[in-house]
Length: 133
Image (spheres, rainbow, N blue to C red):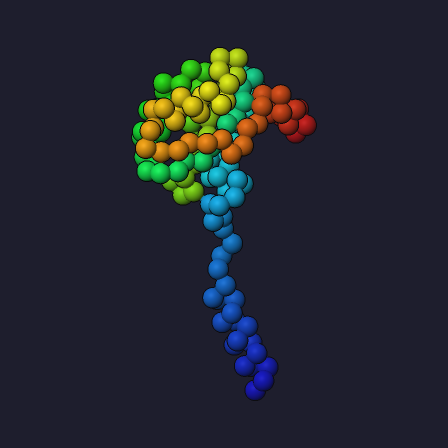
């Protein structure tokens, strides 16, 4: 009887245990939500950096993409957005503009939201990673 009760309790606990997924709080969740292997590989091949950002405030993917079109050096085809966690990423030609300036331009176009860099992977880092694989 005890073994049966223990198995039932164990099964109930497993059924109630939450599934492991990102909660959106840590940087890794925001990067993972907008990561696109093909975009990263293209950025590495073309000497661009990858910029990963969090977005706070009202989230509108269309407005984010429209704002990105106005940013010098930003590869608009590389823009990836995620509503949960609220994040975006893009490839950037840092010879045209620094990541900080690019995000400032996004911020200016989205005054009701806050856009901030959470991770920057330079062109050199991308090239080194691509060469190592």
